[in-house]
Image (cartoon, rainbow, N blue to C red; front, side, top):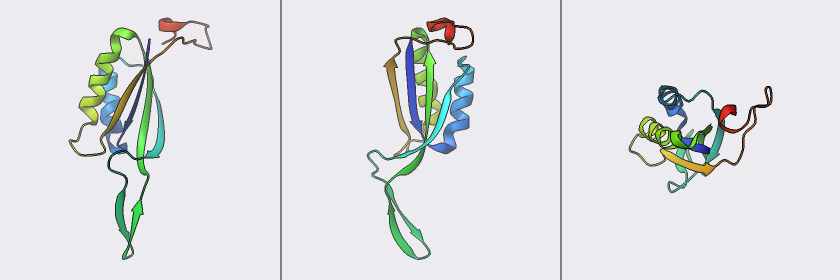
Length: 112
């Protein structure tokens, strides 16, 4: 099993959700987060004063998938989240050792 974590721009969440649904992903966890990468934040003007925003709003998506579905999920996220501009985000794939569905006790791929 694999654990896919993606950090994307907030306005791309619906497009990514639809792309993931098309691949058969049945569930995900979404969190509102803040951070920065190479863009190092941005400069904004508020009431005539310029100030630096170091942490930009992002959305973190977490999905547990079977090994054979991980590449398809990554491609779906890449395609739906891409704007071609800096700050589009990143996708991370981890090995997932075990998963258990609390209600039924199902384990691993059956729990997904």
